[in-house]
Length: 476
Image (cartoon, rainbow, N blue to C red; front, side, top):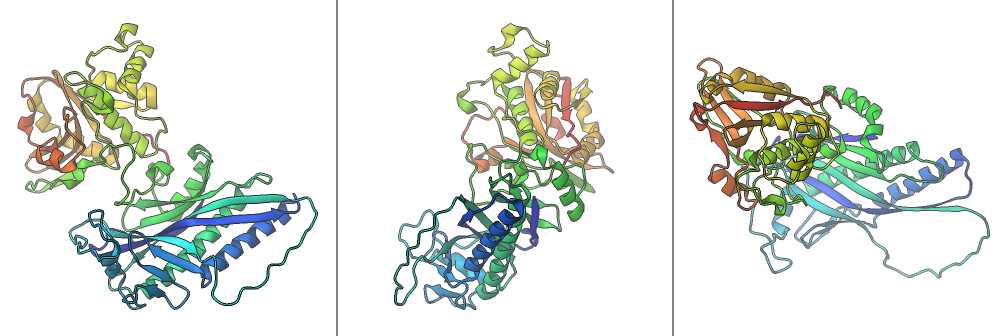
């Protein structure tokens, strides 16, 4: 595992642009000896050849979904001819096709919103010209009889640079080539470090968005080596980047998900991000830290309308632990949740497959049984008391940052944060409602209040409530 580079914070400017280049580089070499020193020498020489390719005139960068092609080592020559070395990086956006445009080659009239909190991304494809202009030389054939081992794999290059405002493609692409060359050096280090005999583990670059002001960093991991075997390397990274030693910032599950990449499982992530925070006198907002999936009624081909709200809130909590890298297991199904409660003796065997409710105490038991996660239980005898729990709830989101499951009467909800004024005691709750049955549309969910800020009157003032506050493991 190697730290590739630190990129300027992608949220530092509304008009910022990230250049991201991906593409396969074919790694091929013959090992004539099994001597480790000689094998390492051959592999290093092969990586040097790949670096030379990247620096050669044959290197081509194609802007995805556009007619733009750039030869960065030919004086940043580009097509169409309107693009020159002095063209601004942000101007490339106008050549990129949106999904709604039909005619190839037309400029997109759609401009990137300057109100977006995230940097825009220009995706590029790394390619190599296979032929050259000019006379062709005659092929030369030779035959050598000897025993050797042939290594062949594909290196998944994935490199990013953050451009500054008014930066030209000449300057940006020069930095991009430097970053590509640097990434190949880091790939070489990982390959040699984790080589087993004549077996290569493919080096895999991943990007991680760290707390400000660090921003995006790129780390190269050996593919196939589980996170559990990379703890020593992660500790070194945390020390190098001055990160706290109680949060798994650079586990694979925490890899940055770029805005233009849809999640393949179909679940919405962090629907609360589209909301506007409430304003309270001398108030502050305290939110869930990290990424979670929104689980609600009727998902997964499961009709749990009327009884499954606590199951869905539990699934949302489990997704948080999974997507922060604390656990690797999938989000449990209703049946797996019920089986876990039967296994710990909380429910009889007949409970499995039923449509019976669960509450906060059961959520606590399942988190411990399936994830090894402990939880605190907060009990209030009536809903009106929740207004006085601002200090406890803000402390939870500051120190733990996990979603909270709250159950009372026949309803369960997920608390994602609070807005609280220490001076006046005013409080608002950020609620994610598992009773939603509609499509995965974040705007509808926000507009209709399925994810939204609620006042103290949201709770039944006379009903009792139990809150399950999951405690995150202090690990990296």
